[in-house]
Amino acid sequence: MNIALDLHVMKRLLFSIVLCAFIFSDEYSYSLVDYNSTSPTYGLDVWDPEYLDYITLHYFSSQG
Image (cartoon, rainbow, N blue to C red; front, side):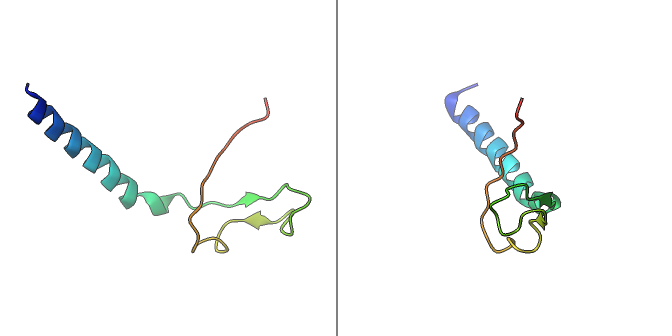
């Protein structure tokens, strides 16, 4: 294979991945309990619909 063909294949693969991410992006709706005792929403389920108009970053971790 030559470099131009490899680049074409990589572009198509990247396009497919990005397209799938956009198509399935609304499938991950969820809510979580706010365990931050200094937060005004402490003890409540937070997410939907309060933050639908915001761009959010989700990071999950464990303490162990």
